[in-house]
Image 1 (cartoon, rainbow, N blue to C red):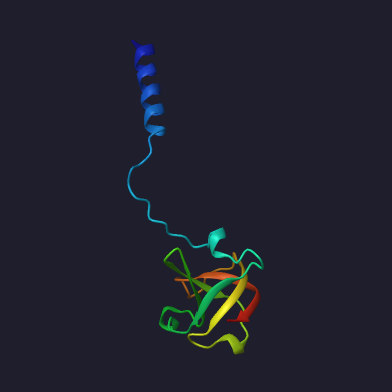
Image 2 (cartoon, helix red, strand yellow; image 1 turned 120 degrees about the vertical axis):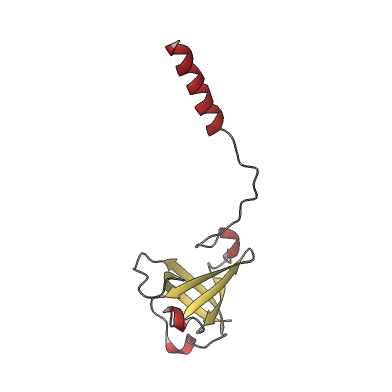
Length: 116
């Protein structure tokens, strides 16, 4: 009896672990996928925004990837690029720095940036 119960339990665990959900998976990402990067030079298009100051973010880069708007907070950005609505191409690295007061954007280190 014990062996039969154990066998049934083992089969049930295996059956449930191999099932896949049929629900539509909503793609929410804090990092861009490879398709969003310009393969030739590693740049991603972004829009500079100053409208999130009340949320603790002085400047954010808004990137739209697969119709999903993602916000990034550059840790250091020259004043020439701190213009609301400015279109830029940016090469960046995600940072492990604390988010500070800006909880709606992921911190990034800007490697290179160009006006677009």
